[in-house]
Length: 148
Length: 148
DNA sequence: ATAAACCCTAAACCTAACTTTAGGTCAATA
DNA sequence: TATTGACCTAAAGTTAGGTTTAGGGTTTAT
Image 1 (tube, helix red, strand yellow):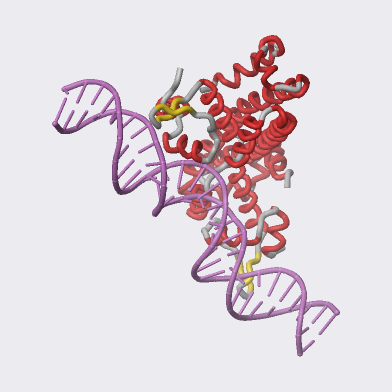
Image 2 (tube, chains in turn brown, green, cyan, orange; image 1 turned 180 degrees about the vertical axis):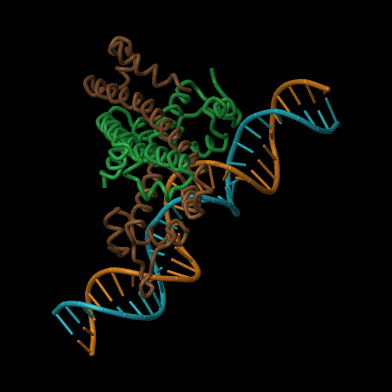
């Protein structure tokens, strides 16, 4: 089972040129060639899967490369790889927390503009905000502003 | 109560040049000046707070600017602003889901390298992965791979 | 009165992560 | 046989979101 670059691009919904760029940057070592044409193995597919996962958690390509390089180096880097993932997990948990805080503001704004729409005026709403705003919306507003 | 650019920079933990850049890009309209020096009002602080929130949810500056411009245009844009926040809320919920999926992979890798560390070898672990891997880790691995 | 600590602008520079361009190979189809 | 469609490379171009540089103006402490 060997895949072409076009098949991989479709499967992961990334462009062919992006895959070639990753290859050039050293994120995809070991890729076999037949007459100069890349043939991706199941192992390569798993590597790309991990790259995509890490990209979603905002890891920079140079850090992804650092990890890929460690894999090639073998067992001497197991500790460092474990730390890499522990760190990445912490960062991701923090990012989720951050997004949940931002979400509070978005939900508040949704309430705000729904009410403004009802009244036909944002100024009118602003003028008597305490009159129109239920307690739980005041709380939402305040908690969105709490964290710095 | 008017703040200087330096005070704002400290409060939001962003650089002075970034604030000037936002101003230049039109994200901070209405800022008063005294002898050419910017004086930030409470309203300006709230605008910067919203910009920071939106940045955390990965909104591009040009879209933040679109919103800021709508605020200036007044009540005729209330519907559009409501839609903007509804959309942003959906995107943020999706991003949280995406991060939670990525987290499964990170947690799996943490288990994986902890075990590899124990055995002193990743190859050894790989060779008999089913022997070493508890059911719930197999599940975690599979569910991380499910979504595309 | 001079140096430190603020503030200002315009314009050049930088980095990450791609994308586009220009030119070429090879295999299959009309 | 010629054209279509996949693949290839090297190198230049692009975009977002800043940062740095160079030059200059106040105010305040020593």
